[in-house]
Length: 310
Image (cartoon, rainbow, N blue to C red; front, side, top):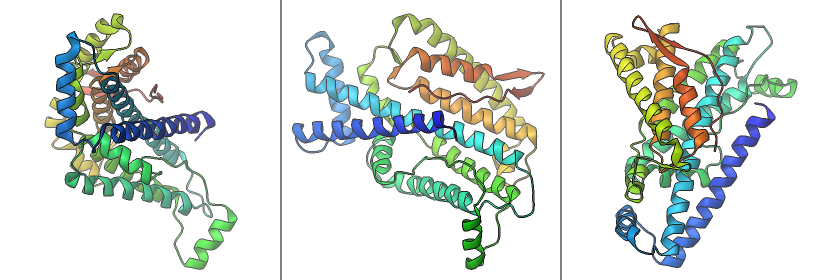
């Protein structure tokens, strides 16, 4: 992963940490911890008080909640983008004797375990997805952190031989990364947009735009997304359950294009449901969707690497 990519991840992590600490401090000042019902009540009070002066502390709460949502959505988009990029790199690795990837394979498997653990615990947590993610991310720093592919060095190879572990080849690494991609898709798919439900009481439109002149662009992107989602659903219906075939490692290139397009559209949909959307984020959504086209009941996806603008 290049320096710019690493810097982008660090910016997201730093923003997450400071926003969470700010929100925690605010809640301590206001009294006992707020549960989901209390948050919804606060948003309802905000909606009723739009005609009057709003308590600055409530406005601060609104700002921090929106920042946390942006960090969560941004991290999900960045993680998928990096993971897809690493998958492409793994496919291009030569199958050479003596080359092994045990170290980075372990890091990918650790990522998968952390995401699976989050999904298993989430039904028992009371808060919305954003709140649960923030709390977990502050404890497990590697949650949604995608490792960069690198070959084992001589020292690491020696350690693996001493432990009696078999070498992980590039082909095996591809399979491991695809398992992580499936798990991350489950994470993205399981997001019920609870944060959006809580925050929508603040909003006059489905998304609060930093630049009001972006409203027309927002409507065009939403219309494009709806049209392409419908076409994708039709293809998935005739494709006889794409995801199951992908899980059984019987996928071909067209199946992968369908799968990746499905994830991209879900991420675009989640971005458009954020409480606040910037011009750059709308442009990101537009570019994402423009890479997906349909011709004669076939889907085409142009490879791209688009960093989500946080």
